[in-house]
Figure 1 (spheres, rainbow, N blue to C red):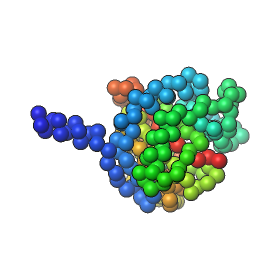
Figure 2: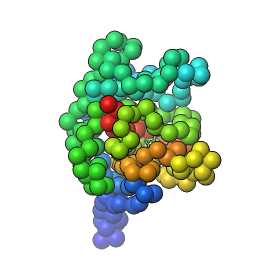
Figure 3: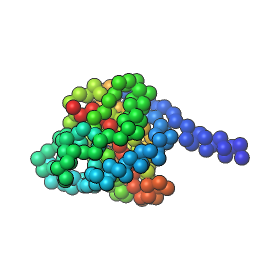
Figure 4: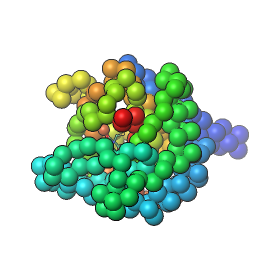
Length: 217
Ligand code: MD3
Ligand code: FE
């Protein structure tokens, strides 16, 4: 009984792990605000539904995306960019919910990036088989601001490379409630996500959601 109780506490206790210079993994950091995040996400989805966008090369992404905040990341045949309007509706992206902002700012502060104030949140939805190939995030104006990512739902294998595409990626299992802050030199490191394995998450079903908070402008 005591051992069980202890294990369940250890299970939800946030912890900190350095992945690289400037990259900090805060395991379980989002667990305490999970209900608020999921409620806010339903609101965003109803205004700006998830959609699978096309790359400039004409391939449809396996990950479905939407955004909230002043700017949203979009891709189509003409390229990648941040845009104030959702191209599907022509309307502004939904505002960033306070619960999103507060979590991103507190995680950044915890990792040594006090004053981070995201203006964009890209929301990725993975279903089994969906993946993201190795890339850098370079569409933001100011690389001195970190990116904060929040994983929800099914676990995924995150591939974390280095400054060069040819650097062999390390594999990290990111789980429900894990938050990672990517700043300093790691801000421009190559990264990706391995194809999502089948599964059922108690709160989200057969899905993984990843929130990435950015300073785009
Ligand atoms: C490391 N998303 O949206 S989040 C992306 O899990 C993206 O959906 C992945 O890569 C996902 O661009 C990974 C973790 C992440 C986000 C941005 C980074 C890692 C990063 C920027 C620089 C280095
Ligand atoms: Fe990325």
